[in-house]
Structures are given as structure tokens and as C-alpha cells.
Length: 179
Image (cartoon, rainbow, N blue to C red; front, side, top):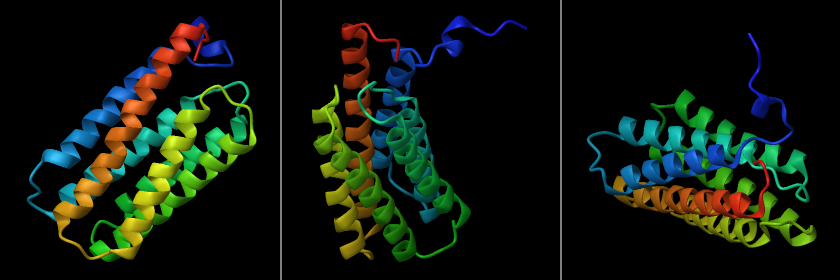
């Protein structure tokens, strides 16, 4: 079976980043506005949102942004989501700390590289890095809030990540890169 031409290029089409951004934004809204019947629902939605956003990050390719950092950053996000999925019966405190660590690692990594490299999407990387680090700190410092507070903080973060991914996709389309 022949492989589609776009899969053989070094970059993926910008439309994949747009689709991932739309899905991430939708999950952010679900986390923000869905009244939770159980902690398990929150755990699964947060973990899925982390994994989808991680996949979108892996798909990102800014030719001046080190590819290994993009992939590592996405893998941190995916791993954080997988760990949360693997421990669904743990306490909210453990999940908050894991989510907070994942947010801080991802945000610090992307912001640090964007500050030290000439990258096309520097503003997006720095903005999302700052948002990730701030929300990560809040989640770790305040680990036992009501379920809705945790859902709200993570939901805002995932929602913002999706919006920024969509904006990046349109910018990539406008500059004519196959991303």
C-alpha cells in the first residue's frame, strides 16, 4: 500500500496541529464546565487532555526550535497523562502534585528554549511555558482544594494550550510551511 506523500515529508501538515488544537480546546471546555460526578471522570478527562496536547506538541515543528526539545516536551505531557491514567484511585493530592510537576517541567523546558533560541513561535512558547509553570505551582502549593478548583485550573490551562495550538497552526499556514 503506498504511503501518502505528506507522511513522507519531514514535517506534518499544519492542519494536524489545528485539529489537535481544536480537540485540546474542547477538552479544556469540558473540564471547565462539566459538573463532576466522581473523581474518576476528572482523572480520565485530565489525562486524555494531557495526552492529546502532548501529541500536538510532538507534531509541532519550528525549523529553528530544536526538534528534540519539542518531542521531549510533548513526551513529558504524554507521560504525565499516562501516569495519571495508571493511578486512577490515588488521592487528589497525589494527582495534583503529578499534574503540577508535569506542568512545571513542560513549561520551563519550552520557555527556556524559546528564550535562548531564535524560533518562529517564540511568543507562543514563552506564553504557554509561563502559564504551565504558574498553574503547576498553584496546583502543587494548593493540593487539596475542592474538585472543581482543580478542574478549573487544569481546564483553563488545557483550553489556553488549545487556543495557542490553533493560532500556531494558522500562522504556519500563513507562512507556507508544511507543519
